[in-house]
Image (cartoon, rainbow, N blue to C red):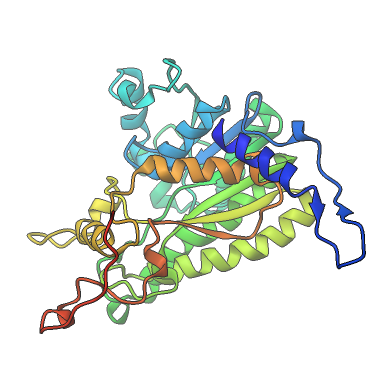
Length: 349
């Protein structure tokens, strides 16, 4: 793979470090080349939060499958049957196609509700809910136990889930209940997953989550405490990298992804108005350094890097995959520029 070749070239190029005048170059100990690569054959990846083929979780799973990983997923119980039916009936076959002509196989689908850590946390109304009927093991601890029983130890953990029941409300109008629910489902769920899954991961394994630039900049329309949840997620990533790294030898990173019109993101809208995600995509394309569309596969490829041995010395980072929008401090399409103002915009040659 191109990334593997690049990594090997960089490794060879950095074998010597320039020394002060009069001294011989210092040779740097290099890791065996065989230990750096993108082949994930024999490795098992658990992707939490896959319910269709439109989101980043699916794209990450597919990128890992391209490299040979065994894919298992966790799906929210209320949409579990719909997702499994779509798989069984071949409705997702076009999206399962791999570059080698094969198909991504999802070895197992686990029901997962990541707001519950143990069976004791599940309230009676959820137990009685018909959408949870027949499901006995859907909390984080139970899913981890089931994975251990089915696969022993795994290698990769992906957190691709978030929920804010009041996401369309400004923070000033968000209730305590809504705020805490957003942080529980979108941030603490990653903490809990690492708590329960890291012990069943091989040393050298890796975990990755998905965040958003609203963690550090104001994004009007992304409300309900979701911006706070993403900020917590990024902070937790750094702490988990330290703790899980020392305790289990597992790396922990997060990807700050640009806007994608997934099914979940499309729900952030007010009836009769252009959706938040459509506005975010339009704004990003106009104002980012790379004024082009962002694809789920772009995030999938970056996640593959963070989850493979290509990044075996990388942990605790927030990696921006947003066509560079995070680096901009001014909107080039601002109304303030319409009154005779202009910006020097480099032109493609």
